[in-house]
Image (cartoon, rainbow, N blue to C red):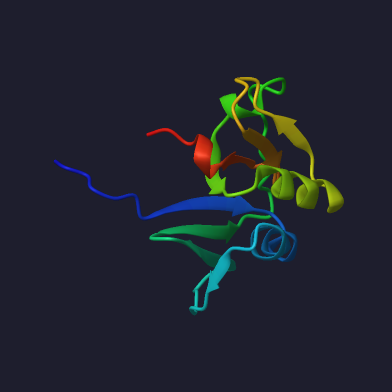
Length: 125
């Protein structure tokens, strides 16, 4: 088997309206307009998609509350980390800077799903 691309990740959310505000408005992801047979929304990030699927009982329990990056998370890159940080803080989202010293931070969506945001010049492969 040779896997050559990651296509999407499914994220459980309890409140679609709050989740769409976070992923669509705060993070600025492009929504994929498509008819779903279940409550949810899809967002495009380059060649990758994020599928939000509603589960009224969805609430992430962090396994490591001191270091958010040591929990399951989605990582995004940005060109300006300071702008991302200011935007998240202005909208009341929690921030935890990366303890590694690299230009990265962690935040949480309304259901406590962890999101990593790294400055693009600092991303290594």
